[in-house]
Image (cartoon, rainbow, N blue to C red; front, side, top):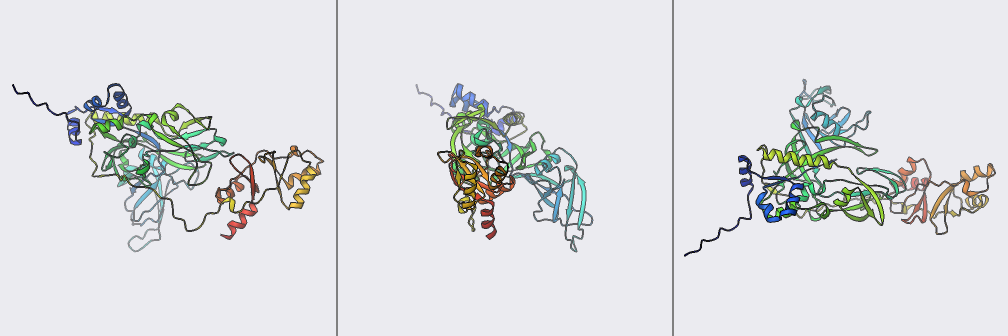
Length: 506
């Protein structure tokens, strides 16, 4: 009796096969978080057999966002040259009535916390906005000034067009300085008293398909509450280091302000929070393993944003499990950490996308071209050298706190300086006194140096750009900055006069 040949197990499926199951209502769809739990409980083979699509989501600040709009021709016609919407300058990319609203553009009138991101949100919400434009005029475009009010229904086209979105990785930010700084990672307290991060970790679309096996030009996605598409790799896409980004496009007239929100970061500027989700078709068991990635397997760098250089120091690597716990440990120090993005909204995006697919309202698309896997981002070519603090710093004249005021006064005269840096026995910064402090103390009959030392001292480091140090001098209305190392040992001093001499020669 002949044995029947065993039918080989099928270990692949196609996007068209999945789309057919979506049409018939038979597709099995899980969010990325649900998929991870299934793989953990039942294994890769079972998950591949049972699941057709995994949905992902992320909702965070995407400064490299914007919208293309076409406002139509006025009567008489006008070629817009300079334009503002709700006092936000909007870019004129070339054609007569096409405009680009940049998310990070800021209002030129109060409230200055309003920007391009808010303008896009207002248009999406159906609000009326003011358009003002000027032009030089020509025979075919004679009009030179225009002022009108518009809603999204008055626009011929209104497309969200974001050139760098959906970061595969994002730094965790800290600040080693002695002063608070304000960044695109939010408010960072001095001496690493807090940390901030962004990204959805195991829900992040690009972490669930890290080699872009199913993501490329033409991939159908969730964007801002409606359906959109990937139109290419984003700017600064770095596949080699798994720092990929996406360029995306969608019809903003159909979007929702729930998933597209303008925002302002204190003393930094405006931005746009963008909701983005990508369905990952489970074409093979390899994709099952990729979509099973957990927060504890996803790492990012802790970066010192207190150093104003392109190559900021990377202090440690931490997992998203640690980040989401609310605290991280750096060099033995426990640091409170908070997210700059919304995990709650990212989850809602993944669930919404799951519902669309399950209800037959959203179909998958195979990319017509995959994203590059060998790209790397290079720094700007600079033809002029950058001036740093070490280019102008002088030797600091120092004293101990125990010295008499009259002795310090003599040192000011003999050394021809206006600032004396107060140090301890190891040369670490304790404070600063100025010639004015000494003069006033002598006039008032004071003898104890400790009574006149300024304890809150603004400092700099040798490798800080001189422009940054100059801004700090102006910001705090001071005339000198002690130069210190990471252990607060005094290396020198830079004065406003030193800065002016060098910058004045440029």
